Structure formats: C-alpha cells, structure tokens
Picture 1 (tube, rainbow, N blue to C red):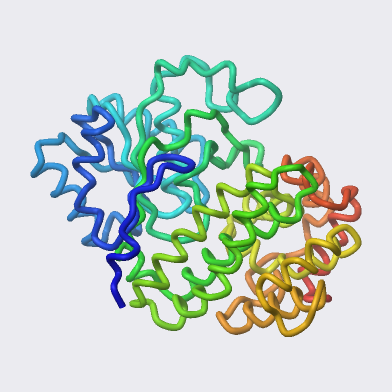
Picture 2: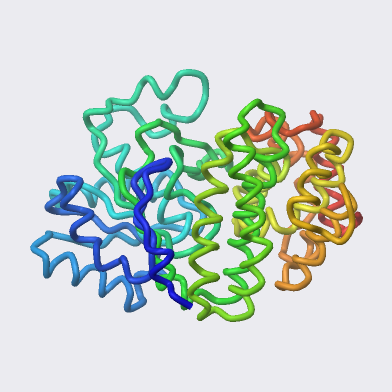
Length: 389
C-alpha cells in the first residue's frame, strides 16, 4: 500500500493538507497565516498525551511562542470559551491552533472569534442576522488539526457551545470562523480507542445522511454526502477493528470533512434531538447521533423514499430502498459496538417533554424532511430510549 498516493493539498472548502505525517508542517502552517505566537487549544485528555508535547515542541523549536490551553469540557461551555480568550490575551497570542476532537475544534474556533469582540458570546448565536454583529477585524486566524473523524468542525463555519445557565446548546456562527488551514494527518488518530472511533465515525455518517435527506436544493452537497457515506461504509469497520490501519483512518478523516461540508444543506431530527440531550445529560454527541439514527430514519420514512432508493443503489446494499438502508445502519451499529437504545448510555425519561420542546426549537429541525411537533419529538425520543423500532 502506497500512502503517498493520498498525500494531497486541497482547496475546498478551505486549504487542507492531507496525508500521513503532515503534522510536521504545523509550524509552517502557522507562519503562513502570519502567526508568531499561537495558542494551542485542546482537551485535557489529549493534553496529557505525547502528541501534544510533540506539537508544542515542534512549534517552539521553530521559534513560535506557543502555549497550551486545555481547560475545556467534552461539551464545551461559554465559560470555557471565555477562559480561553483570557489565556489568549494574557499570553499575547496572535492565532489559534485548534487541535483535537470536535470539542477542541469548536472551542478553539470560538476563542479565535471572541478575542476581538466587545459583545458577549451569545450575541453571535446563529439566529437572524447576528453574524453581522461580528467585528471581523478582531478575529484571530485558526489552524485546525482534527484527531478524531467525526464532527468535521475543521471545515465548519460554526461552533456548538453549551450555555450552562440555560442548559441548551447554542450554535455560534460566522463565515470567517472557517479555519484558514487544516491538517488531516491520519497518524494522529492511531491511538483513538475503538469505542470513540465508532461513535465519532457514526457522527460523520449522521452529517452526510441528514444532509443527503434535507429537502433544500443543493446538488453539490448531495453528491458530497453520498460519497461521504460510501467512505464510512467501507472504512469505519476497518478503523474500529484495527486502529492502526492508517489508510482507514485517512479515509475516515476525509469522510468527516465531507460530512461537515455537505451539511451546508442542513441537518435534521438526529441533531435536533442530540443537541438538547447533550446539553441536558452531558452525553457524547456522536454516540447520541449513532443511537438515534435508525429511529429517526424510521420516523422520516414517508419523506425520504426516493433518496433511500438512490442511496441503497450507490452503496450496493443487499436490499433495495429504505429497508436496505435501515438494515445496513442496524448492522453497522451492531458490528462496531453501538448500543441500541438511549437508556443504555444513561439517558432517562424524566425530561421527555422538555427534550421534545427543545428539539422542535432546534435549528436542525428546520431541514428535517418531515416536520415534527414537540409532542412527536418526545415520542421519537421515547422510542429511542426504549429501543422500540
């Protein structure tokens, strides 16, 4: 296997350096964006691992004044972001290296946004024309380095941040939150445990699947979503079964970026439910989407028939149409160890009505192929909770 065939530079939707070992280009990437003193933002788990020490040493050896900020939660909060802003200013930094999984990438992007703003973070929630409030001149440049293949936040223009006071996840958005440079190095994913590989990989699938089912007109996103799902079909089982499979890791990183690019077309009920459940129960976002997936597919069946016919053909599934896709999703979940019900991951029914109301109000609900009321979202949540397909 010649991994050099995968060593490429892409310019869609941003500048992306793809290939094994390309993390050595991190200092040059920072300098390309004019950084001399980047703040490396990551999570506490990664901060304790050698790859972060190596990245810091690389940058410092190159003359970059690089410091570490790792005080963020698995579901990053507004306070985490503002603590990062304080660290950025105290260290005299001029850019951000967002390094890690979705939480680190989202937090890093939000920190880079907020370092030059006079308004509070929630003033930039993705509602109406709030993005117009951003002082673009105050934003810091971002190099994004994903270490999981799931959220695709490295190619996204938003961050999902938890408002702890209101127990809700808010989407902070601005077009220039898109990192200016991305490094996709599969060697950074080799130590990822099988369970996290599975959950994040299913998150990548959920992005492509929901974007593909969105009713909005965006053929480019639809095509990207289809190929993203094929990559997950082919490579996620390999990455889970053998974490050292560099080729599988590389293709899953690409599938993750493709899913996040495709969901310019919108998301749907999986995310409309996963967002409130993550905020209320502090559960892993990718795992929530993975468990919810077949229940949402079933609930959407009346609105996605033609899409499922095309998807089943594209993936060359054993059965045609909706039945084939549902069977594939269930088989894939079983193969990689995803639980069948939400109750198995510590979710209960004490907030079932609140979850329904929050899901109906979530921005992702607007592009679900079938419109659900709060009551219908609560019922859908209940079925996923009990494992009733």
